[in-house]
Image (cartoon, rainbow, N blue to C red; front, side, top):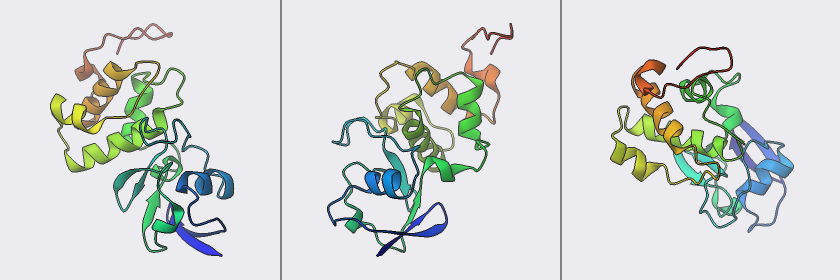
Length: 167
């Protein structure tokens, strides 16, 4: 039996040494917010934080993650979706299909932690995740909203919502 520190709790698991961390998180620990997308670390749907660093879990063998390293998944970001990045994502209707969004959010959180007021170039450099729905403009706007303290009007998207309000 091996151990991982995931979302602040030490969890037991059994897996072959070359098993990707993604599969231990999803199949053994039941943390299904982290998604399988490509299996080659290209798309970012599997992004988690290991000691604060965004990491593509689909190519990270579980044997390379020590029991003392702190893994945070989308489920551990906040217990109720109240993290500022999650709130901005919801306010700006960022997700369409939503499949890639957990990885996008985890990458954006790390970006904003390291660069609280990122430039467009900073966002381009950090946000290498792939979104098949093409919500990149809203992703960029949501990152800027968080950087500006949560003011959705600063995103300047003029999004018309179903309730008639405009963001």
